Image (tube, rainbow, N blue to C red):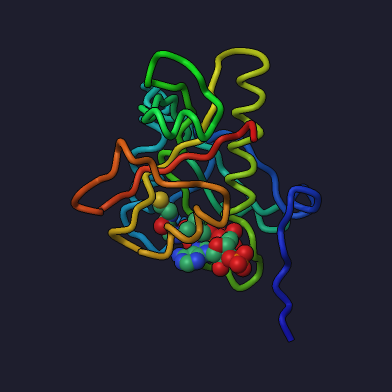
Length: 186
Ligand SMILES: CC(C)(COP(=O)(O)OP(=O)(O)OC[C@H]1O[C@@H](n2cnc3c(N)ncnc32)[C@H](O)[C@@H]1OP(=O)(O)O)[C@@H](O)C(=O)NCCC(=O)NCCS
């Protein structure tokens, strides 16, 4: 019997809360499948936040107080070809379009057996933050990400399932990462 709980925007609040990283939190025990992302949270996330390089959001499980997932958000701008702009009905003479970037995203692997859909919930949360930003502070038409296919080819499918498509202008020839975008207004 599959006892995994499917997390959605509707029930996420029953299990988790989302908040930005604070110096008081214990986040050294976070373990996703990529060591680099564990090290980033343990050693660099707070400093990056202090220096206004990246703002990190933590998803914390209510029942245990443990960090389940994190994402780091930054401002971004992407160059789109004429065809890409047409695809998004962006009839402007310039190529560069504002965006918000998911610079880091990781889910602690110990929660994967218990829950499904946490990564997707984090992307949905980033989208809601981008909408809020658009309404009150600063424009961002797209969510962007550099899909880290060096560590796991499967992340491409994960982002595609979440509405991202690859960018032609930033196609990385060494294929360590694939630059992708999601139009948050279509
Ligand atoms: C990639 C990651 C964030 C996905 O989080 P998650 O909570 O497992 O994702 P979800 O449960 O929301 O998955 C949504 C869908 O994507 C699929 N998916 C998720 N990760 C996948 C992967 N690595 N390969 C292939 N498919 C994947 C799921 O099977 C699911 O598909 P379904 O809706 O058809 O069932 C997580 O595995 C992780 O932290 N990986 C290590 C760090 C990393 O690679 N981060 C991305 C860097 S760009």
